[in-house]
Image: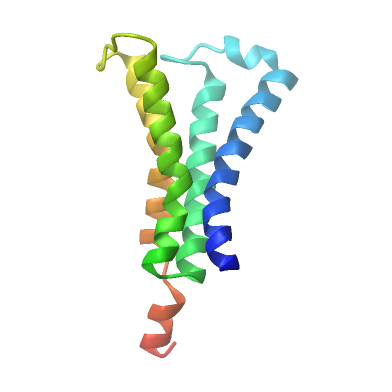
Length: 135
């Protein structure tokens, strides 16, 4: 039960840690938002990569320690909630221009935690698989 709770908490921690890192980065170096970059400021790209990496590590940990369907389900709860909340916030602002660069970036950043957990789960060997191979 403890490992399932950790599976639930690690991706949520990754999302929150990335958001707090963006806050710290823009507080310590406000000029980063003035660096020219397409669509959004440079710190936003950094945060999307950070959340992707942290959720990837959470997915690897989840697959390594709880390689069951329950472990996978617990690992994707927070990223799915993040995706749902992001879509809801996007739809609440009014009519959405789906193919505008900013909208595509927002959708990509909302999907990043789920993609990270899924890639971490898929690309990591489980203890169960190693035990069956005799390694």
